[in-house]
Length: 238
Ligand code: OAD
Image (cartoon, rainbow, N blue to C red):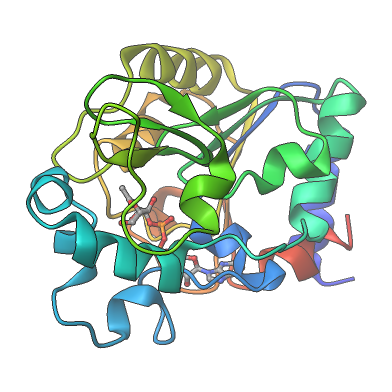
């Protein structure tokens, strides 16, 4: 076992207050592309930049184009949790991990068995009418064609946080609580460039900050342990 993975294992074995903060890189080994890698969503060519398509005003203005993108790129097609999701669920079941805080919207942490998951950017698995709030089955958005409509005529939307929309206060408060109290904070599979989510790691007060990310991030310089490898491959050795 490599030295830095052995060090991570020591930190994990010695803690019963681990918190995980992650992003799209956690799901790439399940076959879901991330946003900013070379083969990520933001480096593919669309009529509009994906950041614009994923904004509140664009959704309101142009639901047809939004849903073209959604059905092509955000549709969930049966991806399964990988070793990283599974290991986090295992640590929680053993009482070692207190929370998973994720920017992902694919529900794979819960599919792996994690219970205390804070989904900062919401989830594709819930949908509701953007006009009257009525909930709809997820399949309507995931499997349909065109723009899904509510009985009231409003456009049904996924319960994800679009650009220009605030995160839920309750999610922020809970995330801050767990990060502030954490003994070991593991950050994994995130470029740490999207705020306010990325800023939450600044609430960590400990000295066991671990980063497991394929590429470099702005937090590399102050992390206590940095591992530039695939997170599923790393976690499967722990
Ligand atoms: P990004 O695509 O910005 O970053 C993913 C990071 O994961 C990159 O640094 C990759 O190098 C790394 N990575 C990819 N595969 C990996 C693997 N197998 N193991 C370890 N690291 C890996 O994704 P996020 O940081 O999650 O927001 O992006 C944040 C937000 O930007 C998303 O939640 C989304 C997006 O716009 C909204 O839609 C609101």
